[in-house]
Length: 152
Image (cartoon, rainbow, N blue to C red):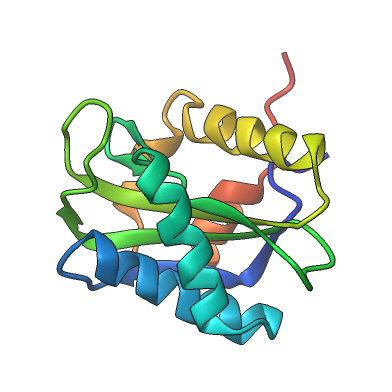
């Protein structure tokens, strides 16, 4: 099973240019709206509401902004590599340059948490984040994020 089967090839932004956290969230919301058909403002507000509870910057330059939305039929993921790191008020106070947006249907319950945990595990795979940072190609970034786990 692929590591992230809820990531579509179109949901990859390999060199996103933003000046800060709010602009990053706006860009993610805009791209997610285009791909899901949901209103951009609803997505952005859900992300802002979650950020008010505490930063989704998990450390080591990684953030996983997320939220639940009515009208969404399945878990949706979008990965972005920022052109320049931005302050995201992360747990380790380090700037963020890799974002994984995760949206879930309003009634997703435990599935949302499982998906969130899975994304965090994938992004902490040894060597993966370095490979993400080394590419500016959407197809390569998609391949890195969805490759089959290594056989143990």
